[in-house]
Amino acid sequence: MSRFKVEVLVTPRPGLLDPQGKAIHHALSSLGYDAVEDVRVGKAIYLEVAAATPEDARERAEEMCRKLLANPVTEDFRITAAEADGAAP
Amino acid sequence: MSRFKVEVLVTPRPGLLDPQGKAIHHALSSLGYDAVEDVRVGKAIYLEVAAATPEDARERAEEMCRKLLANPVTEDFRITAAEADGAAP
Image (cartoon, rainbow over all chains, first blue to last red; front, side):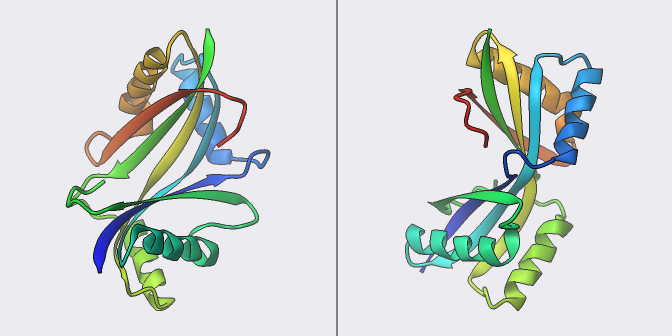
């Protein structure tokens, strides 16, 4: 068993309302950042998982996403697994 | 001017308390995922920025992080800029 760092990015589905993104977009405009055309906000979840292979760690994380981490109706998720090197994210 | 998709990952600094991560860790344990050893939760922010070059887009995003998107005392951030291809994150 090795330890793997798994990065899970959970984002609101395209087309769905994202009030947090809208609020940040508005705040950036107020600060003068007119070049910003869109803002979407999601979650970045970092898991440390004991598993035999990175694929195994990835699969477990996918299951966790379906069961808990993401809302399948309103959110998409992307998963990347890498061997843990001791450096925290 | 081109449009760039900028991914900003804001994460709690190592060593600092992360109550959201703790809550998710606890919930995963309750679901039987004992192989999960640590959970940290941050924000994934996707910006669409009009800029001349990816470096320019990246620099603007860094400024936005320092001014608004991240808390420099408690959070770290990582920025990746790529030319927008029309696909939403």
